[in-house]
Image (cartoon, rainbow, N blue to C red; front, side, top):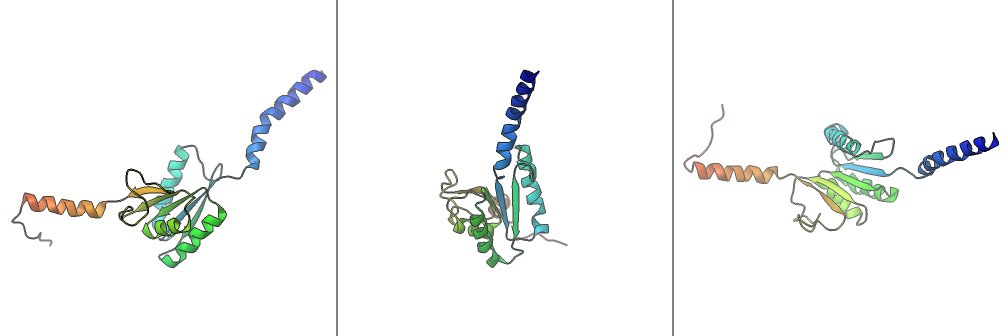
Length: 167
């Protein structure tokens, strides 16, 4: 009888040990930095949460997401980025060009994932598209360049067109 109790005790302790070890380790923190307000970026935050959960990372269970919204006051972004550096977050997600530039200025070691609408190579966020280098990578929305190219193609297709009328 004592042998069974001992085996049960050792088995239970062995099963509980990984849980206890994991509980002692702090959860990784992702810093979400936006130059806009919370309502303006809700869709981005929800997409981030959804993408993380598809990878097995669930906010509040095995990862924490800390949000800072500058609400159009870009001068607040450097302080928010510096706070993330002091907190030693695992990753900074920078939504928008001002947030990405503030995050890049604040750290060279914490990984940064950005969403910007300008050329990240020309503005120094990354070294090149194929090999970003450094600690930053992300999404470059090329809508302005694509719109310009579309107009050029339309002009080639119909060179006599001068303007469209809108009523």
